[in-house]
Amino acid sequence: MQPIAMQKDSRIFIAGHRGLVGSALCRRLCSDGYQNLILRQHADLDLRDAGAVRSFFETERPEYVFLAAATVGGIFANDSRPAEFIYDNLAIEINVIDAAYRCGVKKLEFLGSSCIYPKLAPQPMKEEYLLTGPLEPTNEWYAVAKIAGIKMVQAYRRQYGFSGISLMPTNLYGPGDNFDLQSSHVLPALIRKFHEAKIAGAPEVIVWGTGSPRREFLHVDDLADASVFLMQNYDGEGIVNVGTGSDVTIRELAEIIAGVTGYRGRLHFDTSKPDGTPRKLLDVSRLESMGWHPRIALREGIAATHDWYKSSLL
Ligand code: GFB
Image 1 (cartoon, rainbow, N blue to C red):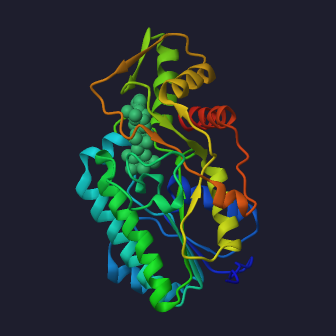
Image 2 (tube, helix red, strand yellow):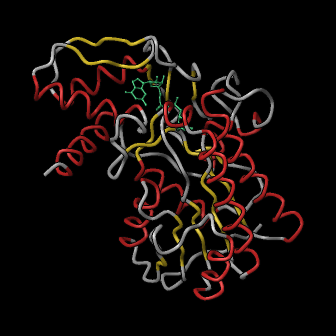
Image 3 (tube, helix red, strand yellow):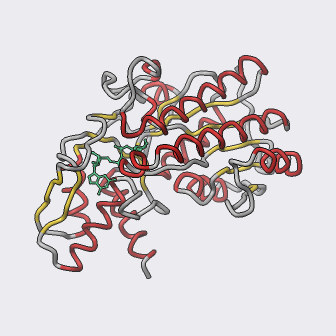
């Protein structure tokens, strides 16, 4: 199918522009010269409110939508706030996708997550493994909502011919991440823990779980690059994985972050905390066959994120 490409003066709504992904999309589209970004803070537009979303679309008439708004968090937040994770994400998806279709949006891009795949899926995980097995229990509420979003985009394409696409990013990190230790993902949590331990001269840093789970990490600026690439070059029903194609253990990640922050103490693994899924590595051959590749190496991306974190404390 012929893609419908954004122009520099297209009206582009970035849903969730204050979050990790949305803010990276803003930076990227601004630096590319897109002049008509439509942005709303949560206080001005609650995407869980169907009436408010519909009237926003009727008034603003965006032509392109990046659906990056979501209630997100790390393993502890997912596990302890299941109702918020399923309700908020389902409501946001239903409201935004339906309003986009009804108000004549030319194309919508939905951002999912690699946790949509079964807990014990073969690795690396291909797009066709979706719905082939049980989900990881710590984040099944979020995963079910994201799967519903994928299916909604596909259903609107099939029944109404609506041009929606879905991307499945792997674990993301970068500037603007959440560094709150209760709700964050592992990478920002460990940057903060090692940074603070170095300053305090602490003898050890607590790392949750056994350290053996494997995770793949993609810098959010690479994700933004892939998002724009797919918005401009892809228009199909199939979901597309976005990742680097390589992973590390949580122990290896901790060692890299210790090196970047200059921390020389011990690692203490708290095995009372859950490991989550044992491995989550995406098969990125579909995206690579389209000609896209990530640019930011993990250590370099972590160093830049550590710098961002330090500057955010000033
Ligand atoms: O990033 P994370 O919270 O989420 O945890 P998931 C990844 C791994 O790092 C788990 C370990 O094995 C954690 O136990 N870990 C070690 C830590 N130390 C820490 C720490 O200080 N904080 C945190 N948060 N983890 C999430 C899903 O899964 O991935 C979401 O819950 C979403 O739904 C996201 O899909 C991308 O990678 O396990």
